[in-house]
Amino acid sequence: MSGSLDLEQRYRRVLRLLPGYYRDKWEQDMVAAFLDSWPTRGPEEDEYITKAARPSWAEIASVAGLAVRLYLGGAGTPHRYFAWGQAVRRAVLAVTLLQAVRGLDMLVRTAWSRHMLGWLPAPPASMVPATPAGILPPVAWYLVAYAWIVSLVALVLGHYRTAQVIAALAIVPDLVWLLQGEFIGAFRGPSVGPWAFWVLINLAPVLAMAAFHRDAPSAARWPWLLALPAGYLVVAMPPLAIQASGNSVWIPDFSGLYCLLVALACLALAPRARSRRSAGSGLWSLALTLLAADAGAYRIFSLTDYLHNPHLIDVSLGELLILAAAVALVLPNATRAQTATPAPPPRPHPG
Amino acid sequence: MADKPMTGQAFFVLTALADSPLHGYGIVREVAELSQERVKLKIGSLYGVLDRLAADGLIEPDREEAHDGRLRRYYRLTRDGRRALAAEAELRAATARIVRARLGLTGAEATG
Image 1 (tube, rainbow over the protein chains, first blue to last red):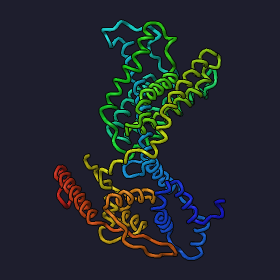
Image 2 (image 1 turned 120 degrees about the horizontal axis):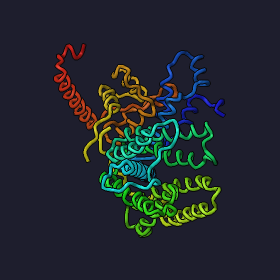
Image 3 (image 1 turned 90 degrees about the vertical axis):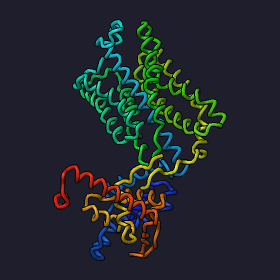
Image 4 (image 1 turned 180 degrees about the vertical axis):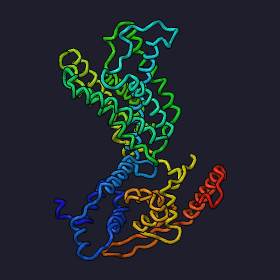
C-alpha cells in the first residue's frame, strides 16, 4: 500500500523502473539527491513531508526517460540491453522504411495519374490513388507520404529528434480520420483493423524511436538510404505491374504484404542464423522477431475486415502460418543474441 | 568515429565540479545558479549525465559524508575531465568571439 510508504520508499519504488545493474550502482545516490531536493523547514513539517509527499510527475518522467535509454541501450550498456536497443532501432528503421515506400508509391501513382510522367500512358482508373474522404484536404495525405520519407532520411542521418517529430506529425491525419469515422459512423463494419494499423504501424514505431538516443550507435547510412529506392522497386513496383495488368486479385493487402516481407527476410537470414558464424545475425534475428510480432498482431486484428469473406480469412491465416514458420527459423538465434551480442562500441564522445 | 560535441548539461555539470567536489543535489543547485536558472536538471537526467561522465573518466567519486542518516557521495573532476572542460570552454569562447564579431558587438554591448 502506497499510504504506508514514506517518501524515501516512494522514491525507491520509482527507481525500480531502472535496470538492476544501474540501480546497484546509483540507487543510493539518487535517493539521497531526491530527498535533498526537499528543503528542511522544521521537524513537524519535515515529518509531514516524509509521510505525505510524493515524487512529482516531472521526477517520475525523468526516471522513466532514463530507464528507456538504459533498457534500449547504446554504447556502454550491458550486452543484453545493447542487443534490445539495436534490435528495436533496426525494427523501427524497417517499419519507417515500409511507410516511406508506401509514401513514395502514393507520390509516384499521383504523379502518373496527373500526367507528370509524360512518357507513360494514362493509368487505369483503379490505379489512381484516392485520398481518404473527410475533413482533411488531399494535400494533408500527400504531406504524410513525404513526411515518412523525410523521417527515414533524418533517422539514418542521425537527426533523431527531427525524425521523431516529423513521424509524430505524420500519424495525426490517420488519427483524425479514425476519430471522424467513429464520430459520424462511417465504418460499415468493425473498425478494429484501421485502429490496429494506427497503433501498430503508426504509433508503435513513433514511440519506439525513443531508442534513438544520444548513446545509440549511428545506423549504417548508405544501406538504409539505398533501401528506399530498392524497397520501392521490390515492394511497390510488382503490385503496380500486377495491377496494371488487371490481376489485382493476386495482390495481398498491406497486412499480408507486411507478413510476407518479414517472412522473406527471416528466410533470407535463416542460413546465417543457423550457422552462428555471423556475429551480427543475432541482432537481426531479434529485430525480425519484433517485426514478426508486430506484423502478426496486425494480421490478426485486421482479420475483422474480412468477416464477410471466408476466402480472404483463409488467405490471411495462410499468411500468418507462413510468418510463424519463417520466424521459427530465426527465433533460437534471437534468444541467443541477448547474451552473445558483440560488445557494444565504446562511447564516441565525452558527456 | 568523430567525437560528438559535449552536451550543454554535461558542460554545466563539469563546470559545477570545477571549483570543488559536490554531491548529487549540490550539482543540481550549482548548475541552476551557473545557468541563471535556465538549466534545471531533473535527478533522472543528472544521473544519466553523471553515469556517462564517469564512464568516460571525466569525473570520479571523491568521498562520502553522512547527512540526515543517509550517505551523500561527492564527485570531483579527473585530470581528463579538467582537460575536456578547458577544451570545451575554449571552443565555446571562440564561438562567442566569432558571434560578437559578426554582430558587430563590443564587449560592453555584448554583456549589456
